[in-house]
Length: 427
Picture 1 (cartoon, rainbow, N blue to C red):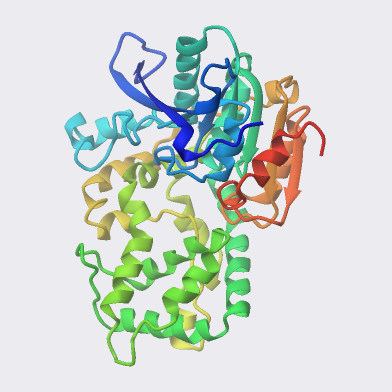
Picture 2: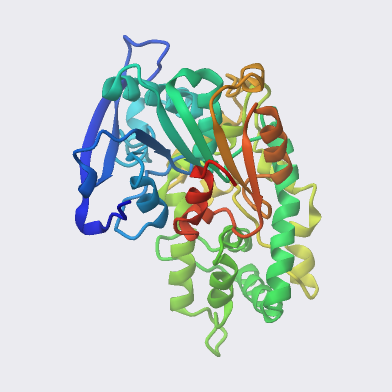
């Protein structure tokens, strides 16, 4: 068995031209990029392919630097294809500069309807046939990549030899409102665990929030740091080291004075850059839960109002705690963020879209014949556990590994352990 190291890893670039709309192959075409990664010591071997679908939506595939445990484990058995999902990385990227070139906000919104899991899977099938013809390949889906994997099992199972999912079993029939109603309590639980671990952070967070309420604070890009934006730092709490990172951020925000430290503001801005750096994520995040009739209608904002603990007023006017939020996109982000602001009307049109195509075929999943193994993280803050378990019971033959050893980032944080467990023929 070879344990590949950075020095003997072989990379190859692949670029494919695919239809924007696979139902109109004669229409507009876009480019999709993928990076092949394999162990140099096994380059002469005809290893099977493993397609890696990363989290998102709207984020490019990981750029290997060496030492990624899960990737090293994968390369022992596979040649790995890291796909930049359409619209990300080197795959005809979409942002505040490229989207307006498509025309009106209405034209932009229509264009973006082709950037969900169903289109990503059809890209993958075109790529598979180009690379290996009729031979099926394996797929590993992390987070949103797991959603894509379940879509793959629904609509093109003939392309799959086996499937692995980590932290990414979606609710098959759950609409956005149901998803967020399941997730907000999990975020509340993460807040409670954080404050139990670091009780001094209760006062620190409230003091920062009161300072933001009482006067305007601008980040270096001109974005106002509001109380609501400060609360979104709770997205950190879903990772294995996130609570510690939030605590360190809150250790000394004022440095003994009455104003927030520049260093604190720089660190906060860096932690908040994930939305501005991936506008595609902000634009279509809620659409990843949309199927059939009914608009998402800024679901995360509406459902948040059903959980009054997240309203900052009680903490600001009392003694806390201030609850941080999670992986949620709110309409005010497109008003206050200078990078997202040019896409505001497009975002509202997507939120108001009255119907969306189906992403999953329950009947086909109930009759599934593809071997599937899935890690379900018991305390996952980003993917609702009970919805995942319902899906695990629905997909015929799926082997679930339910664990509280890892958070949502278990594939990355766990080194080779998580993937090794899923690849094992017996648990």
